[in-house]
Image (tube, rainbow, N blue to C red):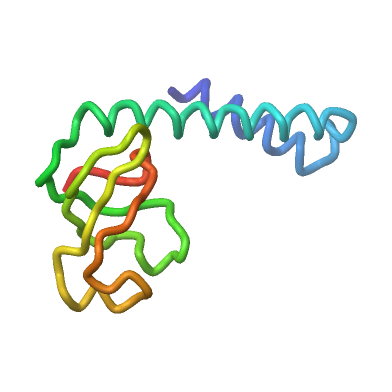
Length: 110
């Protein structure tokens, strides 16, 4: 783990210092693709791991104030979960206490 951290820090330091300026586009593209793949993997796991009726916590969503809120899964779609707030005071945004859809990768177990 220590070697990996040192290597990561060296790459980040190199980017900050301009060592990789000629490769920034490729680095950005690779990072975006990796992030999408991780999100896809989290979605697959969530669709298998969580069932209707489970309570989960929202994460990585916008608007940011919904992150950390506890919701109950009321339905499962292909890649999304239909959820509703568990606590009435959480339902003060545009959805109120109505069910709404979120990407499956944007929930975590509580």
